[in-house]
Image 1 (cartoon, rainbow, N blue to C red):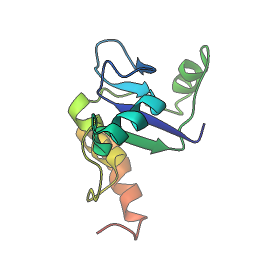
Image 2 (image 1 turned 30 degrees about the vertical axis):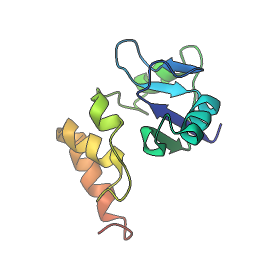
Image 3 (image 1 turned 180 degrees about the vertical axis):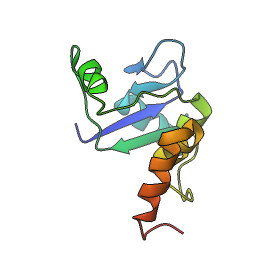
Image 4 (image 1 turned 60 degrees about the vertical axis):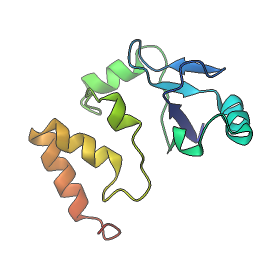
Length: 117
């Protein structure tokens, strides 16, 4: 799957809560399109993340154990915020909130980019 759609609409048909109690959902694309076309939802109610990776079984736990990923907690408002024309990509903002080594990694990666103001 090349992209994932997330949103905060709990009763959207086909949607599944990403983690219990977060109020962040994935899926429900057909219902989302129908809802936008009918005026029930706004296009900006939905976020699309391109290039995600899915894991099965204990694969993600294994990747975390090997240090390939660092799980972090992230607030619902931050995940679902309007992303158009952010001064920096959302994942940099998340890393900066984490502080410490993750914040430093974000700073380093930002210096490698010439497409941000």
